[in-house]
Length: 376
Image 1 (cartoon, rainbow, N blue to C red):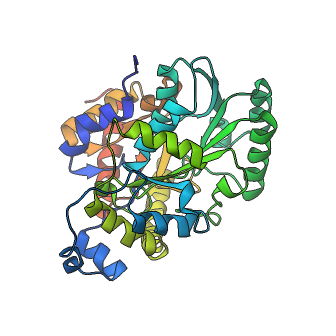
Image 2: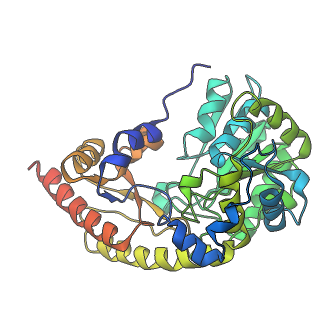
């Protein structure tokens, strides 16, 4: 495939490991193993009896059962353990679509949710979230777009990068639109467990049998280093995914699955701690943005730990983000990584440490003021 460069990942490759303060990432504060042990109540000595053998194609039985208990009412046949949600996205997009198929994707979007489909020769139709309405979802517009009977509709709520979500009633309407169109609904649940304005939305795989859902331990749990995710899908699709992953990754390490199982079994406790931390950081971000009305336009997110912030009047937001990283060692992701239409925006992540967020916002304000005046 002639696949496009993943702009967000390229930006992170250049700067993620070369900064002191991260206000661009989309996950919560990373946990140490000691913190994970304290929250889950296990000891590292439990690993001593583990034999370093292969795991299973669909995932180790313990982790797969834990995920099934959480997401499918115990039905393990609909669950696969993957290398983050990124592997699940790749496998589904490679197998559930054919060249020429139409895919409707929320816009802006994480590029992997449509880039693989585009490389396969699929037709992309954008479902834009409305910036003038704080990136609210326009379901009437989606219904109109879906009259073409697309092969697939791809969404993620709470949304990356804006943090906006939909109500439970709107979720039901979205499912009805997908069903009327006969479309496969792809539900990216990466941020689904971490919400502020309402309870988390239910996983729609139980309500619509043509639904595939992805999840990860990277975003709401603070365990990105495990690189463990999951996919809930019809068993026939999972069987095809297993055949393709035989050429890619085979399985997830049983050592990583051990830690992931502990996290999933104690997910409510972990997410509650992360939500409390993120909520405090969100208040800090809101106060900061409220004090800079001439420089920052900000819509508070409904969930996740990112906001899509507009910088009105900035001559070049990409250049500002680059200068912030290279001169001040602060990570901020330019909106252009999510599409050319978002050149005046940046993804601002507030899930990290409070000290890092405070320092990063201070340096960002300095850069914004200097660049707005042309004084560098």
